[in-house]
Image (cartoon, rainbow, N blue to C red; front, side, top):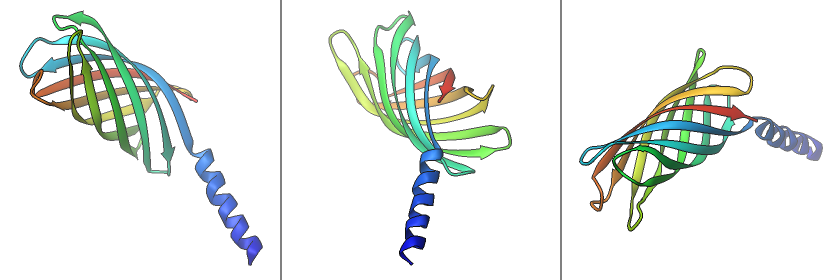
Length: 154
């Protein structure tokens, strides 16, 4: 009986480790504040997830640097995500916290996202995503981000 328990435990933990996916990537983001000027950002993104077949769960962190536009701020997000595999596509739902960094002030809030991704090769993934940031009143109440990103999967 002890051997069966040990075998089941080893199989369970071993399959979780095998299903672990780490990735890094970069995205080009277009920020559209619902009051204020838009800007374009490039984001560096890193994440870790567990794939259980049709469903996945994970977390990612990102930092965005301004490259064009009338505003001058950087962005940071930490998000959890759930995914669903359907044919050749993976649909991703996310939520987390957001911070905008200005020269003299910060604005924080939370975010919700919806996206789709497709594998380009064994290690590369292309993702399109819409992210909605709900901010406090120091900057704007809401910002919609449209992202196109490429990710390297380890």
